Length: 298
Ligand SMILES: Nc1ncnc2c1ncn2[C@@H]1O[C@H](COP(=O)(O)OP(=O)(O)OP(=O)(O)O)[C@@H](O)[C@H]1O
Image (cartoon, rainbow, N blue to C red; front, side, top):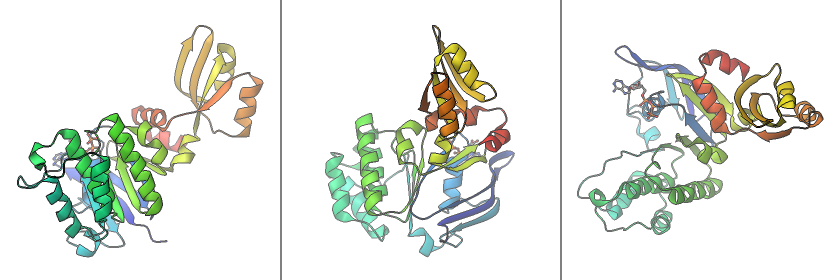
């Protein structure tokens, strides 16, 4: 199957700032990707290049097999949603939805209006009078109802409260199941989106340091809890990511493949094993002083 996106040695430089450095990856059809990394890592710059809003300094970039720049055939299959989206002053919510209908070939009008009800938005209110959360909700509705074959959400849900974010994740999961497409979620709320992610790309200082199936990644580390001596014995020879002592008990998160051998070792030592969260792993990888080594150990 041809990849939806293929990027080779992609680089974007602003004067002396290397915003994106020699990044290569592919995005496949019908998958939800997490594009993760700390502030300023280069995530938005990558998404801007993929959606033809920014030229690359060097490298190759293909979207649906073609260069995206001024390419109507490619651009009509893309949707990019960001939190700071601006709308014309003379638009109400209904006007935004109606103009989206003419823009996105797969737009589902009935679904868009059903989402307006779900998110309890006032259709006739002027966009400039909306609260931050309402503006975010309009963005996620456009992202969902566009049904674009390649949809980017660049933290558009930051303005949403926890209940509304949960609604967004539910609707995204349901709609993606019925209408599979390629979705890229860029977010700092890794634990929240983690159940949705099938593949993870982690950017650190402009470089791609992880490009891996989400379940594989989760399986790279375990959290082990029990009497301190047993936990210390378990952790011997393994890279320790986190360590918390409480009385005579110890909890450690260590880089160790899950699987039978590790489960048996923990059982013999009388320890409890639990899976590690993607957020923990990614925080560790993006904090590590030697990212190249971090990738190798993964
Ligand atoms: N137009 C620009 N001119 C100069 N530097 C820029 C420009 N746009 C981005 N940068 C720099 O490029 C780097 C990557 O920025 P980018 O916005 O891609 O990061 P990000 O991962 O999306 O961050 P965040 O999570 O904070 O949104 C940062 O150091 C940023 O300051």
